[in-house]
Image 1 (tube, rainbow over the protein chains, first blue to last red):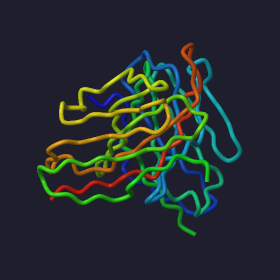
Image 2: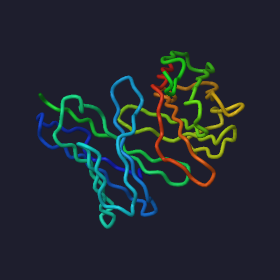
Image 3: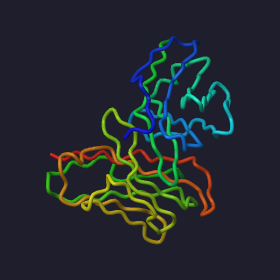
Image 4: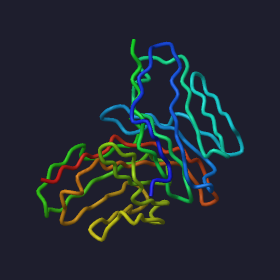
Length: 110
Length: 117
C-alpha cells in the first residue's frame, strides 16, 4: 500500500532552469511532509519540509508547494545546478512511522 | 564526524546465515529508526526506538528480524536465517524528539548493503 507516490522515476533539466519534482499521497491524515535528497553511497539528507497548515515553504533555491485538496506536493528547485543531481524522496510521518515515495532521480545537465 | 554511522557498510552472506548490523546515532538523539531500501524503492520503515524502548514495528519485520537498543545509545539489527529476499540496503536514522512530539527531521546513516547469495 503505497501511501506516498512519486510517479516520475527520473527527470532531466538544463542547468539554470527550474526543476519540478512531484509527489502525491493518499492518506488525508498526513499533516507534515518532508523532502530528502540522496547521493549514491550515502544516506538520504533532509532538504525541506512543510506543514499542512501552509501551502508553501521556501528555503533559498528550494520551494515546496502543498495542495491539500489534490493531495499533491511539489518541490521546485530554481535555478537548478549540477550539484542538485541526486535522487529526491518525499516522505510523510504518521504517528511514529514515516512513509517514503519511490524517489525521482534528477539529472541537471551543465 | 558526529553524524549517524553504520557498520559494516557492506555484507555478503550465504542464505541461512545470521547477520548483525550496528547503528550509532547522533549522540543527543533519543529516537532511532531502521529502514530497508530495495532498488527503485524508497526507504521502508522497519522499526523505531524511543531511547531504549522499541515502540513500533512494521509488518515487514518478520520473526527472523530483531532489533535492540541497549541503554538507548547504539542499536543492532539482527537477521536470522537470511533469505535472498533480505538483500537490500538497511538504513538507520536518528532524530531528536520528545514524548510530546518533536522534530520530524531525521538524520540518516550511509546504510549497510546486504547481499544474500
